[in-house]
Image (cartoon, rainbow, N blue to C red; front, side, top):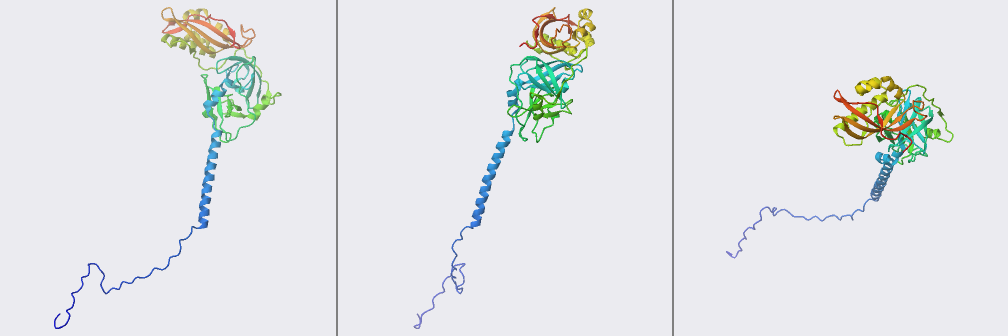
Amino acid sequence: MEDGRELPRPPRRVPAGAPPLTQLQVSTPRAPQPPPRQPWKFGRFLAGFVIVLLILGAGASAGWYVRAESLRLDTEQVLESVKSGVVRVLATTCEGTGEATGVLIDDKHVLTAASALRQPLSIAIVTEDGRVRRANQLGTSADGVAVLRLMTRLDTEPVPLATSNPDPKAERALLGYTAAGQLTSRSVGTTEQPQALSSVLNTAKLGGPVVDKSGEVVGLVTGDTLTTSTIVPLDKLQGYVAKRPVGLTAEPPGTCDRSRGPQNAMLPELLVAATPLALESQKALGNYLTLENKHDFAALQQQVYSKAMTRGYSEKRDRDNHETSYFFDAKISEVTRFDDDGANVRMTFNILFSPNARGAKGGTCNQLDLRYQLVRERGQLRLLGPAQTAGQTRSCDTD
């Protein structure tokens, strides 16, 4: 203090970044806030409605899936359940057709394709396990169905006709034999969305049954050719096998002097070890059976018979002995060596023939058990002479 006066104070230091001392800091009070808004009632309703729709939609989808699965079938499972009643149909006819699939609908009636049985002289059916039965044709329909009656009963499980048509969306299967005699099962779609038959069919499958998931017949495939094939519906089939059949007409029997069976190549089944000699014998006898079925007796003389056999077994004699015959289901059960590089072969087979054929005695089908001697000429095995009996001849109806 000087002269009684107080000295001024030094200026106050202001922190860096602080607002000027002259700036007034005014605190504005906040306006009162409204209470929290409650969720929108309609929004809650809409959310609940969407959830309900999702639940219902999931249920409907699950129901649709279950229904779709119930209409599908397993072709292999169906085949296993009905194969005992699906048969091969073989015949000697004037036209040389005579091969189809058929279905045993009870213990004595078979449905098949009429196109394979034009003017038949003899008919036989063969089961999946190899049993053979002779049959007569009762009649044919305008849509190509043939009804056969077995001459002796067959103790096997039939494939009955369904009592009603399947659901239009239900999957169906066609069962039929290949030309090699193998039974197959293939899907043919639904009644509503059918699959083209040409994609699963061959001529040997004509007459095959169309079955549903339960293994009952709901249709039959018929047609003169693969391109004209169609499925005859259940209601038509029911009329053909009623106690008083409707829509059937009698098919005239064959009147030709010479008839033939199917013209496919034959190869006997080999029941012995597949040695080089057995395989060569199988090929030689397969060629023999094929040419006999085709009635190409000139080719037999040139390709199958030895020089010794052609001298004593003329083409005319061959024709006279086999003018109505058809060989099938051949099996080679024994092969032994003969004359250094030849073979002794035992072969069994079935032969279908006309009831008025030489030596038929009113029969139409026999099981033969024969022994053949094959000699090597010009580098291949040939028949030395006619076959010799190795076992008893039996009717095809004998198991």
